[in-house]
Length: 207
Length: 289
Image (cartoon, rainbow over all chains, first blue to last red; front, side, top):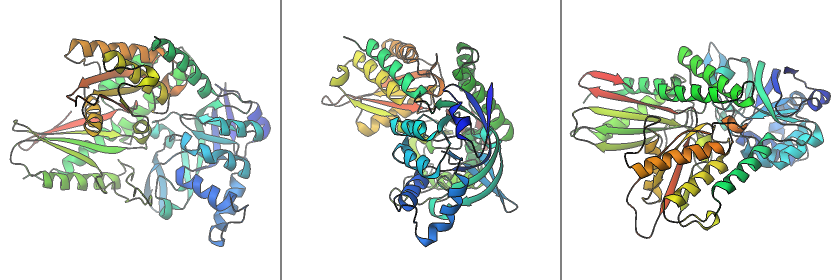
């Protein structure tokens, strides 16, 4: 069974998910990776929600759209045609780099799902449990396939400052496929697989 | 001298959008080994579908089109300066045509150059050879898998790894465990034994140009390739780190001379989107492989 989630996502829908579940997401989501996460924490969160005037418009927009919303760790390949942006390739990037920021962002904006690859660590897992959020794993490298599920690029923020891969792309997706690998009940497939492979490694290098 | 700019753009297009047949075949075989309905098999289904779509639509397999690494083998008399100019121009054109993502950023400020050129970017190595044809090998090496590469200096106490092939086995398995699914498993390992820190890493990447399944002519190294492949898969990390049967598609090892004082083992991890292709120029004829 595939769980279909539409943004904004409710806490109940999140609590119903368990690791291993397949989901499809629809609605408006935002890409954000290294530069964007650093920016959100420094400009919005550490200022106690009082960003400099120049950053206020983006802050208000994100506060509205990320409430029950979704962040996607992705730096896409894009083309511009007839004045409109289009995603050409848009698989996930490695998520663990955002580990120091993610829990703060989940809490501050009430983010319900973070999509990426490779999984995240204990801080994010704790935030998922406390604030009813999940980590969703998309298939790394599946750039063309996922780009086909991006039906519209609504807008882009910080493009000039951060560049194409690092900008906030505001995109509408339909049926974006992913697997729950960290749920809101404290379970992480990544932690399980790491522990299992460590035990097997120890056996292979014993003596 | 010929202007090869457009021919190189085509090499980049093929490399970015059309996964080599040996890699696709290995992924199909991996799919058959995973349990029906498992997350691991689901991931491989998505990977294979994505591979077909990218080829058909001529779009990048993965949005991280990586560091373009060019290995150029040229006959006597060619100008490497002009070839480098043509490669840099081709990379910029391929970026404009969205075969490559603008991927070169200033190391300090993070400012994106916009066209994939910059200081020592793309990577180009020139080798003069005695044939009368020019060959260009290209690899697009993504950041996720590059970040999980590892270099060990033997002896390495934490793993009781000494200066022998048993020590090499230990550290390479450790590198696979450390990488988990982060390098977009199932990947390919290129391993270099020996050299200095920089030549060792470079030689490990050279191994990734070998066809999958090609064993080292040295029987001892060939055996080590097989052993590590089998044991890395026994770790159970699986596609995308979801758990499963296939963690690596192959392991390719070679050795180079080293200083008596140094014993490096370098592991380069290549993601499943193992984008490597070649181009040979004979007279006016350009052949892609």
